[in-house]
Image 1 (cartoon, protein in one colour):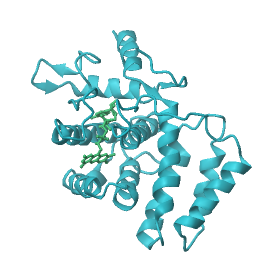
Image 2 (cartoon, helix red, strand yellow):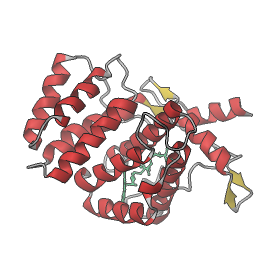
Image 3 (tube, protein in one colour):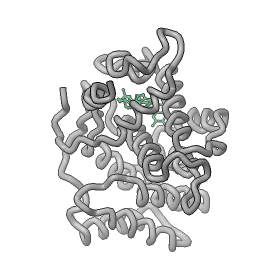
Image 4 (cartoon, helix red, strand yellow):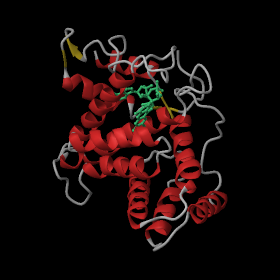
Length: 261
Ligand code: FAD
């Protein structure tokens, strides 16, 4: 049964290309647009980079890029977007090649350029971080020696609030995250499910919206086709199976830049 679910999670694929594009875009196109970093923004950036340094699956053997970037920023007391961009560019040149060469979105490619792309990549990145964290620390509540699971959700909250280019989306997300009490999540698997549920709430709100790519309609995820054990009939979720599916999907990274059909 489980090897079947692994096969299906490949069709609903997670691509290294998308993770890296989302990361690069967030550093260069979003964070770097900040004029002056207030204390709040600097703190949000430091936490985002810490979480990336610890849990982002950077290939090319180059986790050093994120570790060094985090160290540099953690020691800054004031920063501008321009300076941050220079730091990123310099490190990238020094440690080259940091990223795989991909010019296009793969799993996040829309049917037209205005659809999908970066917002899809950003969701994907944060789902991957929740799973990568849980795999790293196991099932312990309040694992010792590492930060609590809410650091991942907190990093996302801080990123969206301070840097996400779509300000309406950001204020919706911040309200929802507060309502859903993201900072109280204490168990790694619960952080995975928290983000899954929150994302489904956004999917529900945006279903049939003009922003929806007609080829990729917003669904309550995962689809029955990809996980037929994830639902108890039509009425409720089987959370164990959903968790299992999410852990498979968000840890089995496809390196090819051709979608698996
Ligand atoms: P996305 O919703 O971007 O999902 C990306 C991929 O994640 C999917 O292809 C699927 O593989 C997987 N996935 C889908 N649902 C789940 C789930 N529940 N759990 C785990 N994985 C899942 N747009 C607006 O117009 N208004 C908003 O208010 C808004 N708020 C946003 C808030 C945030 C934090 C983010 C990151 C984006 C927001 N967006 C908003 C953009 C919107 O949510 C979509 O990202 C965008 O419309 C592209 O949709 P998509 O079809 O590529 O799928």
